[in-house]
Length: 398
Image 1 (cartoon, rainbow, N blue to C red):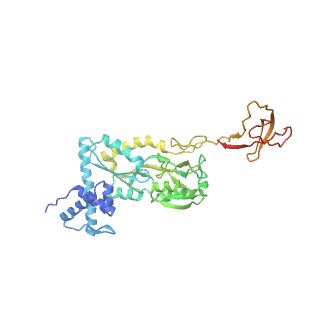
Image 2 (cartoon, rainbow, N blue to C red):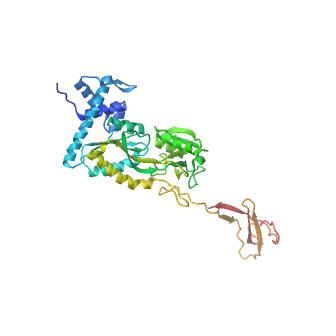
Image 3 (cartoon, rainbow, N blue to C red):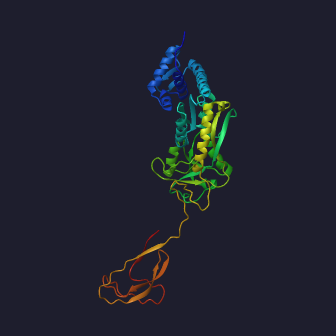
């Protein structure tokens, strides 16, 4: 009996099998949940097998038969991509489907521009992107659901190829009123004395903690989150500092509060950003074309996103974060001097004015007789420690 099913149905099957729910798979594939549910029901009817156990509280549980079908579906989809790429190579064009994975921490900053530049050139290509953590990216490459991943050199398996595109040294995120925020840079030892908000993702956590271990200090972790925006907002609201490698364009957290970014001084290991893919996949015309495009794009963009230690320079790098050396304070003094009555004879005397609260002594010239109001004549000023009878006080600093 001839079976009738589509590659799209197989893609939905694999997506739901990995996500564990129709809703999450629909979000990742940018389609409606009812479309996926309908496609799965049709596939189960065509195969005559239950592929999932549907439980409201636990989502979609793959049956033993479903696991076998998903394994073969992955191979079938890979063969279909190979066929599409082969036809494109024979025509000398980039076609078929490209499945790109990217780390959550910088997907929103890098991928949109990177993708736009590629699909504008290769209009026949179907482009899918997935944002997730490092462990899921590696799993996707092994299972064939991803063709290439934009990621860091964290716990890389030996059976995958990594093309290094640049080094991203770590930097610290601080709230604007943090005691260290006015410095040009900080050391790991400096940070150890303050509470930390940890970006808690597989493999990334080990990297951040290793920075403290190599410096011989221990961090004071008070909060953890796997969401970079949540980490930034916690930092901006004063819960602690955080460490990152990929600097955002904006120095404002999601709730509008400002952040300060400072480079970390001393010997700290940077992360390497690059492209990860299966061995042999680089022979694909589509994947090779994307690798070439990504190299050109990222090597032009990355230098502007790196925060380096610089002496005597503005480290804001276009973000509006300025760390200038403080100027000596100037004291501005207002003297409440009453108006002298018109026509009145005025005898001006030189007096010594002292402002104990500001630690200031100065000499000024003032009238002897004041008409309105009349505090009385000024004393003769020939000695020390004479205070005038009108008030003078600091009005502020700038």
